[in-house]
Length: 127
Image 1 (tube, helix red, strand yellow):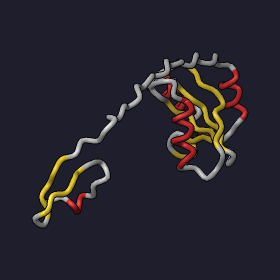
Image 2 (cartoon, rainbow, N blue to C red):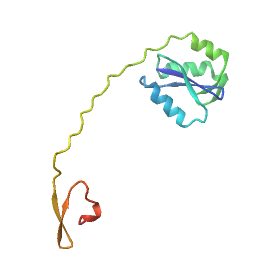
Image 3 (cartoon, one colour):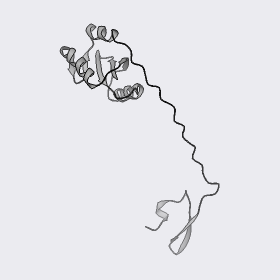
Image 4 (spheres, one colour):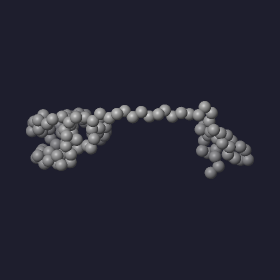
């Protein structure tokens, strides 16, 4: 899937992602960018199509996958069909059950016995 992301700085990123996790990808990009980013559109395609689009707009390239925000790029984007987003099924995670009574194990320390349970500190154990 190919995505087009607009930056408030006047740039557009044309990139590729394997699956439709647009929210996560936008978050990843936003973390490293001081300007607000907005997803403009996603279209179908792979690395080859992304490379073709990059080549088509090479005169507007700033650096890497970032391009100047131009009418030509917007015209191209508006002529593309929106890719269907992949809806994932929610994964149901079983709740962890805790035993009603914690298991106590005995460890010797300074000729004494201490009860070991989940609240025991590592410094209480003999190494």
